[in-house]
Length: 342
Ligand SMILES: [Zn+2]
Image: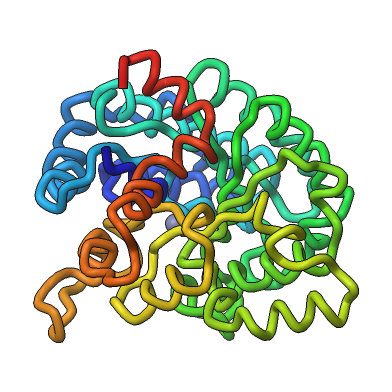
């Protein structure tokens, strides 16, 4: 089985975006504020957007199951207050849940949280509980920077975040560390802000001792771990300077990287530098980079090709990246698959 642990509902019906625009208009002009019930999306519309997009490509490229969360750039936690984020997160999470109900063999939901800048993270817990207990979500996306590129929250190792971590440990769910749209003109959303955030999260975890407090806590750092694998020597050296244990003990029981790296040399570096047990298959399609690479003739985000073409990985290692590691890192996913006899 090939499990893609990083997919977003980037192809949701246009009515969703229209509703969101109304919601944003309603922040300044309360008379424009839409009701949740104003958004009407039928099952047929959901089916159509999935069958002609994600599911079509999954079948074409040969992946079986996608962990499916709301569109990351649309989370936009910096917009409005907590109430705005809470309403928006509930709508987006419900849509991913509905997709998972319509295509139970192909999609399992992961939740976005109703984060808001300056608001205590524990306010997100009711949505998290609903998503796990009622919607069968097996993971969350945690935004380390709800301000959208201004980094006004404390580092991930700060006690500020602990209420979320306590719930993650209780439910045995990992968090993908995932920022959203940048509202800082210095940082392009997917080209700079995403990769910066991946690298920043890794360094925050390196500087701290979070996993002494939470030995069971698990983070997935997407987009191949940002710059961390490429600069592994720098991070090993910094850990040494900071009198931290070896990275293999300090971080690699708790931190995992996905394969959303869009060329063969990048995947080769990732799989050479990072232990296979810490690598999870993912494509993040249909996402930031949708074009065809003229050097290969295939889509940049067709990441399975790079794993297949790797000359370093054995068949067992490829299996671990495709399936085995995901079952270990996402125990609730494994339980759902086992309940289906898989
Ligand atoms: Zn993503």
